[in-house]
Image 1: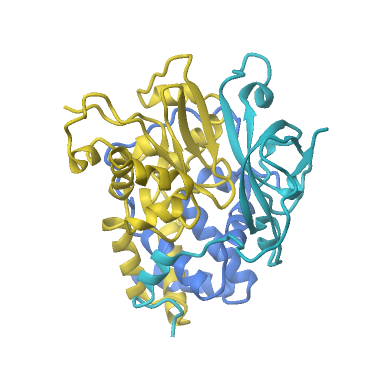
Image 2 (image 1 turned 45 degrees about the vertical axis):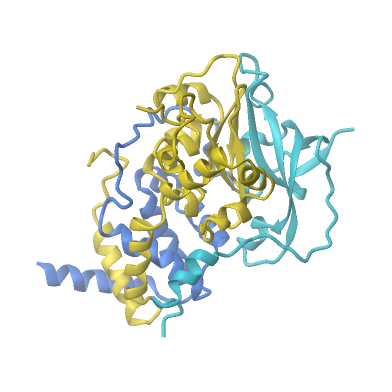
Length: 117
Length: 200
Length: 103
């Protein structure tokens, strides 16, 4: 029998499948307010580190908690990392002529980030 | 329905779908009754009216709004909205000086339980490429012109958090009921490309 | 991977052209594709991350020339074949069979 029958649909739709890891004791590596730089890496595998923030400097805005790490789960692996909202100015991302008071926030995992001293 | 090049299927798409459908059903990997129910659910039950209820409640119930800003997933679930692509929600609030807008530059992540399935433009290259770099021109295409002094905050939902914009409550709505307020909350205002509608 | 899916900051895609009163689905064939996401997830054949990565591997030209649910279709076909659940020969044969029936 197919795994998904009509009877199962309502529970699956309303329950979902959270990627949050609630029983992890993984310490967060960065704190809200930390000045950080995204690593300039170009994996040939799956990543959620969008190109436009690679090498760019921002500030940790929120700590979302620990989540399954998409980069390894996409290759049938297992792993989890802290996920943070990181805030960048348009000026930092796009350079001269772009606003220093409009912002992009993007969600970044531990492995994408290095702390600025 | 417009049939521009973004929309028209490739020549063999429909046949390919029928073939795959037939094989998946033969192999008992897909139950057609489940598919029908899923389609009906997302066509008729799960859509931006859900999100509008969340917004109107937040506008009228300060305690609810506090819970919504602190733990959005739980506060949204209080109203019965939860599940696939809305498991871990964040609500971002528009204020006098800050306007928020949501995108997924890498794919099409979108808060399904509160907004339903995303419109084509949200999933397509023009919006995804431009809103993180030139959000004001994008907002103008939706008829939304903001003062230069308003900060624009663009949220790229590239990981597993899903974002919902809490629009500002329009002025002149003091005497309105929650149901009347819900009517002012469009899908686009909860993505952040528009403001909430003004009362008629 | 640095493929076309990673669109942030690119230029040249033109206006956004939102559709008024847009329907949830635009074609009947989109509906089964949407449903397969849930069926194949429940069956343990896909997860959301392998699914996204399969879309990224469709090829840049195909990605730009096809629509959202065609991306899904391509991803499911890739993953079903890679996982050994079905073969491309099976799909080709079924397409030929169905095309014959309608002629």
